[in-house]
Length: 140
Image (cartoon, rainbow, N blue to C red; front, side):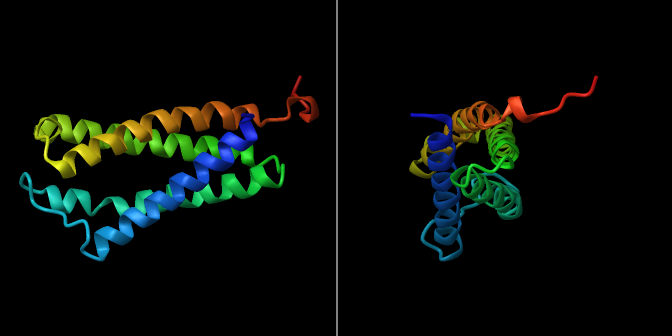
């Protein structure tokens, strides 16, 4: 699979899955419980940061589908956002001990952390490969 297809598919999946995830949270289908003091407040601080990633992912997919050079900007931005979110959540889970409380909900969260780190790295790599270096004029 080439970089363009990888960027389009991972970007669409990341945005769609993330939006559906937050819909289930706000609809009460995925209840957020206070596992450690302050957890619910911390958890509910993510929608805006996640929304930034969703916007970048959607733009990465649109621009990649159109072979537009901005795909090479928005795919790595999506990847960097995913890595930030994954590392931030991992650090919080480690520091609070939540990472070691293997409830079904926390297992889902661990899978999300792993997804963020691996897909984030993949989007940075393949997004960067979308650059058309032949048409760039480098400063001398």
